[in-house]
Every structure is written in C-alpha cells, then in structure tokens.
Image 1 (cartoon, rainbow, N blue to C red):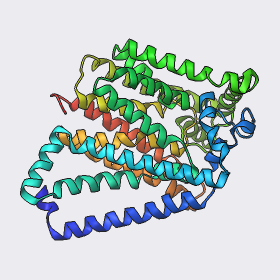
Image 2 (cartoon, rainbow, N blue to C red; image 1 turned 90 degrees about the vertical axis):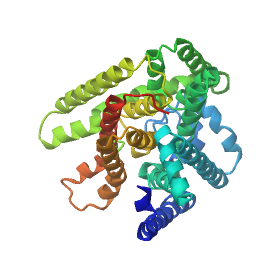
Image 3 (spheres, rainbow, N blue to C red; image 1 turned 60 degrees about the horizontal axis):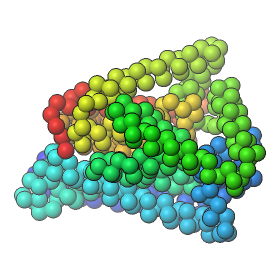
Image 4 (spheres, rainbow, N blue to C red; image 1 turned 180 degrees about the vertical axis):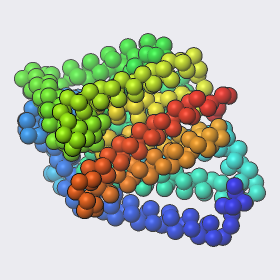
Length: 403
C-alpha cells in the first residue's frame, strides 16, 4: 500500500485533493461563517424573547439558555464572530482527537510504523491527510459553521466523555454526558446504551446531572418561561407530524410522508412506514448492542458509542442537515475498524455513505428537476443510513480483540 502511496504522481494527486478541500473549507466554511448571518446563533442570542414563540420554535432545553446569558453582554456582531472562532477552535480539537484515534489504532499503527520505517513519515502524513479530507469536506459540518449551530461543541463534549470513560474516569464522563443531553436531546440514546452495558451508576449520575441542570434556570427565568418551553416543545411535536416538511428536514418521517403524498396515498400511510422503520432500526441496534454487552475492547466500545449517536439521528421526527455533524466519528472510526479487520466491503460502503452525505444538499440546491429534487434532499439521510448498515457489517466481522 505504501509503495503505491510513495509514487510521485500519487503524491501530486493527493496534494491537489488536500488543496482543493482546504480551499473549499476556507471559502464555504470559514469565509461564509464570518461574513453571513448565523441564523441559529441569532436565535440563541435572542433566546429570551424567542422562548415559546410558535414562529421560532426555540426548543433547546432551559440549561442552554443559561449558557447563552454571557453572550448577551457582547454586541451581536462581535458575539457572533467570537462564536464562530470558538467553533473553529473546537473543530481543530476534534481533528486532533480523530487523528489520535486513527493513528493509534492497533492495525493502523502497525501499518503506519511499517510505512515510516520504509518511507520516512509518509504513513503519518497520509493518515493526517485522510482525516483532514474526511472532516473538512464534511458538508453538515460546514453548514453547522455557517449557521452558528452548537453541534460542534456538543460533539466535542461527547468525544471527551468517551475518552474519559475509556481511561476509567467514569464519574466525570457521566457528568459530561449529562451536560450534553441538557444542551440538546439528541445524544440521550447513549443513556440507554450505557444502561445496556450494565453501567447503572453511570446512568444514574448522568440523569441526576440532567435534572440539576434543568432546575438551575428556574430561579433565573421563572416557572412561566420554563412552562412555555415545554408547551412549545409539545406544539413542535404536533406540528412536525401534521406538517412534516415545515422545517425542510431530511428525516425518515418526512421522506415516507412526502413519498406517500406524491403517490396520492394518505399521510398516515407514510407515518406507518416511519414507525416501522424506527422499529426495525431500534431492534437491530438493541440486538447488536445487547449481544456485545459483555465485551470491553476499546475499539468495539468506541465504535458502539459513535454508532449509537448515528442511530439516534434516525429517531427524531425532524432532522436537519447540521444534525449529521454528530455522525462524523462514525465515518472516521468505522473506516479505521474496517481496515483493521480487513472488512473491505464495509470500507467501500462507508466511503459511498460519506459521499452521499456530502452530495445530498449540494445536488438538491442546484437541481432543476422539480419532481425528483426532493430525492436529492434525502441523499444525506440515505448516506447516514448506509453508513449505519456498514456499522452492522463491522460489528459482525469483529472476531478478535482490537485496539
């Protein structure tokens, strides 16, 4: 493998790809983030007047409101630029963390060592380049930066939580998971995951953390505003199921209902397919997680953790593109494990999955075919789903201890 990578024309091609990815990220990610209005951060910044408004649907948990109070002390244009800069710093941390995962994996480390002995530091450089391409051309991540979303910070918290759990600092890891869920509901499925792993103390600590963080805003904002949040959340759930496209989302619910409508079928027909899909996904996830409950290998633990996050994205009745940012570790760790276990089928499927995630909204934005354009909008969803299926292949193919 490294003999091929050491050839001059491969080096030139790889360098050109890196330059292209870097240019695209700087223009679409960095420049756009600083120059345009981050619509989501604006909602965060004006959270107090948006709580409970039916036209805003500010439904982040109350603890997140506390985190946004200091930002109100800074003028919005300055606060937004600081927020973007903070996201970029977090992104650098995620990149470094991901590189450490891949570079230190058992099979990957052996390959890198061999490459270094025979070709200098080509192994390390290609690994770093691989991580750079996967992360910085991940379109949901660029959207997260552009809109000023909080998902990058949420992802960083989850990665630190996983690392602390692996090295045995489970109490702190449990608190971090509680903080993540208190900020946004999406990672809540990890509580079920750790419960299946018989980590009852871990789940109790996380749950207590969530409850405490949810009670902290009560003296500051009052019961009336907190109740408005729950009312707005209830209205949101009702609205999503009655008007499944009002958020322009890419969820399974929207896909099945949209398909049913285009086939002149009642909406309840699509909703039935949605519930059936969720039942199948949850059943497979439970089975795979439960049968591995007695294993403690680091590699399998890491993949199950990030695979659970990917599973969680299918459970929400509405999912917008930036939510897929949390699935980024699925591709990085999944690709690593597929190489370590020589699962080339899973490797190929994950590559296709990553491509579909990146193409989804880009094709949807430029297509002129109105009747089928909605299908392009769901390519990102299909991409994550295919990556999730590749995860099943990896889980089944793992025979020996890894990492």
